[in-house]
Each structure stands twice: as structure tokens, then as C-alpha cells.
Amino acid sequence: MSADHHIVYWHRELPPLDGTVLGEHVIEATSRHVPHTLAHRDELWDECYRDLLEQTNRRIEQEVSRLSGRYAHVLNESIDTRHNDVSGESWLRGRFTYTLLG
Image 1 (cartoon, rainbow, N blue to C red):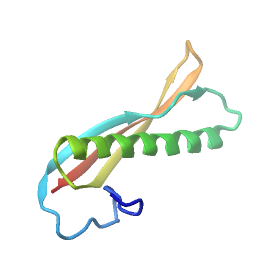
Image 2 (tube, rainbow, N blue to C red):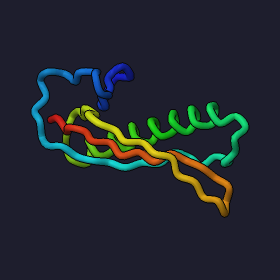
Image 3 (cartoon, helix red, strand yellow):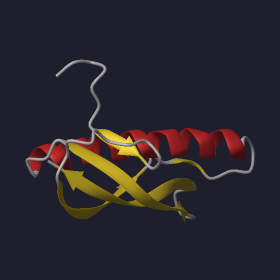
């Protein structure tokens, strides 16, 4: 597989037209944990969001391979924040709906 070939297409990105719909699936993922603080809050959220999307992309690629597909088209996402007051950490949790294409 070439470096410019990708498997996961997000929202408005259109996957190749030669794909056959194999079904719709849902995957959940979490970002890494960061300190729960007001200082640098926007930067920490951006960092968690990037990490969440990287984790999700990797997980969907694994699922495409496991389910013998060729592509996935992410249709919907729901992302919320989580925190643990005891550890003083926050993170993002996402739920992503995608169509598997063969």
C-alpha cells in the first residue's frame, strides 16, 4: 500500500466510488489524559482532540482490515470531555459512526 493511499475518509472527504457498502459501524476511542487545569485549557483541548483523532483513525484502520474492507467513511462523531477529580486529569471520549466499504 502506498504512503498516499488512505483508508479512512472523514465527513466531507469522499471515498473512492468503486467501493461497495458493507455496513455501518460504531467505534469509541479516548484521548490521552492531561492535567485538569484552567491554565492552557485551549492548548490542552487541541492536543487531546488531535490525539483522539489519531487514536480513532488507527482503530478504524484496524477494523477495516479485520472486517475485510477497503475503506471507511466517517459519517458522524460525538465527542465529550471526561475528568477524574481524584487524579486531576481530563481527556476526551469520542463515538464515531462510519460506513465500511469493500
